[in-house]
Image (cartoon, rainbow, N blue to C red; front, top):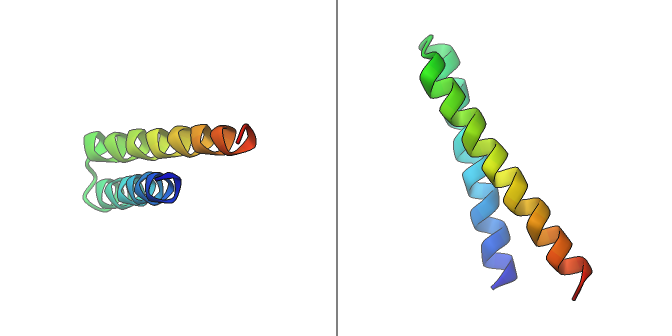
Length: 56
């Protein structure tokens, strides 16, 4: 299950990058902020997975 979680977290981060880029391209600050939030969530979840791996 750990690998699936890591992949899901990375997908969330990449989705956030896409939203941020789209927000910049369309001059939509709300979409850009949402993308940054998605990236931060993905990064935070990835950090949690790394911590869990250390304690295995």
